[in-house]
Length: 620
Image (cartoon, rainbow, N blue to C red):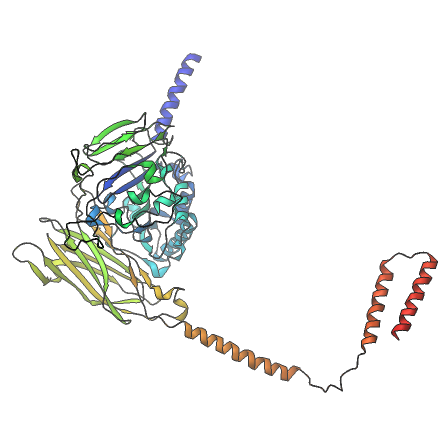
């Protein structure tokens, strides 16, 4: 019986550990990009059963976040921290098809269970304030003026029963002015099981992450109910960043980037205006040699012991013709075409090396051997301000459909501040065909491009403007959507300290309803805008305040002296003799000394008394 128990116990522990490990896995995908850049996508996913969640047994689910969700009645949560601009023309389609991307700054949307809109607003206020403290962000500034209720743009990603959907409210808020920095990364890492001490999370460093050309941190919490299985609450944390290889190789003791000397610049000599004092950068640079320790500043410290061992921790998307070297003890797996994954030892450091690829000579290689050709996105979008002056302006958004034979349908969402008073009647779309017999630009009928419009007007200092437009763009076409707006004049106290810098306007959210070739949904965000409002000369109020304060001080001082002070002649004042004053002071000092000192011999007391009498006689 003891033998059977001793054999069964290790087997039971092995099964239990495997079952526990399957609740959490992590993976890093590296993808070389043109212009000597590399995309690093970190994915951390864990789950817990709904029954355990309700019983406050969270396992790998972070308790700090779970308690906030329970208290605020949150059924699904999506939080984004983003910086930079994704160069779609050079880097191609966005990672995760844009579903893990957020507007510049902080973006939050969630489904809350509430019986009324007022109750949902109260829970939304509770949620934003709690998340503000958890992630060290200014989410508590998402008030009613920055909150909207999207109608067509977002759909729940989790599995919700029909009974719950009837009482679910979607709220969305964004802070385009928020600066994402290390204080937001630290709480993000604390939510992970290994907390940045082992596994791929050990590569995350604030100096590298926030020095990237583009970066996005995402947190998604949603219920998942597989067919015939138990419903679980899943949390997925992702970090995507595009690192410049040459910039990332800069040593830590040289934090200030300095431009290279002129003789080291790589110029395109085929340009007609190229000369000794003019340099145009080349479109394609020879691939540089880089390693994980050079790009991230350190090598990966083993693997997280809680992760699923069946999921390889590191993968790279590169042509199989490109050489890739790893540290000893690493197993290579060819998962699919142009993708290789690696199983690293549990305790040893992991290193990955991509050697230099020459573009000239006998062993010259082309760009096809350096990186996988970027995938063409379904839609290109860019937004900018038009007009001039301090009273009125306009917004122009350009949509381009690169597909020659497939139309694209999407929902365009804008959340504008209340001081941008848009004129809805000026909204129009112009379509430009790039190919075919009808090449040119025309004013498109509303039914051809704009399918549906949802407009929720602003209320001064209470809520902003919400504009949702469902659009359809024909193949190989470009659509110019424009509208005008009027600028409001704010109160004196409503201007920020740097009022002349301008006010940040959140980027537009584009939800593409046309499925990708892989059968997945996609979305993208435009860049934010900087709006200049009529700004008063703050030096004039300062001068007025100083002048007023000075006048009041002079008037008050003079009037107070007249009412309180009494003026008398010099001869009428009391005559105080300096000698008498000195005598009084010395007498007071002697009395104080007599109280503090102990009495001495009788002869000494007589001498002291005689000395005092002599001094008094001299004074008189």
